[in-house]
Length: 269
Image (cartoon, rainbow, N blue to C red; front, side):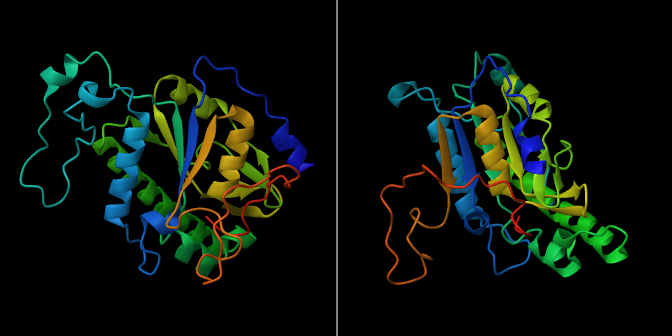
């Protein structure tokens, strides 16, 4: 029943179509062996590659100066950020195709808090679970903010959005309710949305974990993007775990007959 409810969400009609949904793998953009540690170089590289993919200009027409949109002062900065408002006001556009949606994994963020408290098992009557729910969301949303910052430094107009805040929920860990309107409206306004795996409410269990991969599956069904791209720390999909020395990189996959992924990820962010 929950699967049917999730699938009955109306398909949005949009003047802007989604060109690409990009998944930034948590293991690629964080240091999974260190609690709440971002792999700064990989994140910078991913954001630079996204900017290149979005660029509408080529060669000599490419914008020489990047409009950095992170105007916050960070601890240790000697002065307030320099913002050339006159130059920005005179721009006719960003020169970017922003018909992208980004979804990222949690990596070294959120997993510790969720596993220690058992959030994915539910039971908000438990003080430990309720505290873990709060702690998990603090962790994953802090990573989301840092990814939005990194994209903004590349001149990509990004806004972070969480599935919990958007009202997404599950029914016994199966996706049951998705409020697409809260995603469509800012997308139509020209923003690149940045979503993530999250702790959400569950109709039977009280709460659970909704994974980024399930979010992508649902968004792909609703929005019919031209591409879905996975940015990971390996070269692609293998016939077995890529750490296996006999693993073979698959050059193509026949998706016909693949089962619909409607679950919550069984505790994975």
